[in-house]
Length: 196
Image (cartoon, rainbow, N blue to C red; front, top):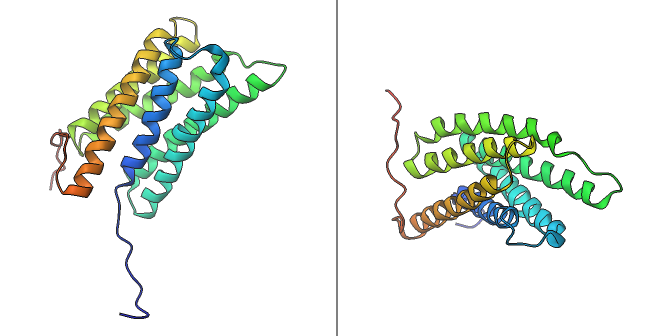
């Protein structure tokens, strides 16, 4: 009908945000495990900033526009984490001074706690998303210990790779469900149910 305002079709932006997380986390994890040379550190940080930060923030803002508080909060807050840490490390890499890694311990601790809460909240969505947040919580916890020089970068690297693979899995499952009406990869049922 001419002149009528067409309602926007709602898309699952969580898939977009998780694809960004997959690229950022896999790149960082491979770098932490020594698969990407230290000479490419700035490139790793740029990839983490754009995909882990900007892509998640844009997806989160869109989710907020759709009145999805859980997805919008998670995507924007994780996006701001990646944006902040990557920017600080880029500044440190390009300046005559270097930030000490202990600077990043508090933010990792706060995000470990936030992710633990997300394990509970996403259990109302499906098993795959809740399990992804378990791995994210472990990743932030391990990274906190690495920033305090208690452990090496190996465990955080392994966990970042697992986060990336889990995020990619969920993004593909969500996207295939949105496009075909069924998930090509199972997401599992909700682990918790809201009481009436």
